[in-house]
Amino acid sequence: MKKIVLLLSLSLFAMPVLAADAAKEMTPQQEKMKACNAKAKGLKGDEYKKTRDECLKAQPAAAAATQDKKLTPQQQKMKDCSAKAKGLKGDEYKKTRNECLKAK
Image 1 (cartoon, one colour):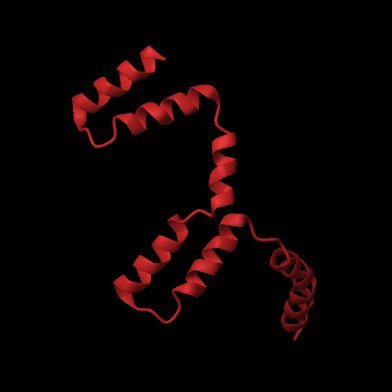
Image 2 (cartoon, rainbow, N blue to C red):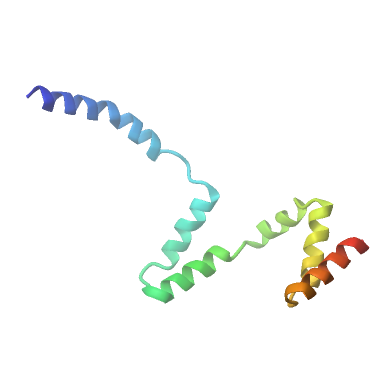
């Protein structure tokens, strides 16, 4: 009987802690995951995965614009040079990108 009372009292003390964890706000990534999972609800297998992955990869236009504003000049330079070398493979890619980085 004492064990039951002890367990009940411990569970009552744990309730506020569990409620506090549940009340935590979701991060933007968690919100996006929730929305994408809801969008893919009812689909099965590969179709579910494809829909969810496309949704997660998609960025709103406003987020993409602010992302470019956050880049440092060096980061922007690297982004531009990587885009210039896109489609090339291996040593050819590295050579083109490195020449671009040195030129600017």
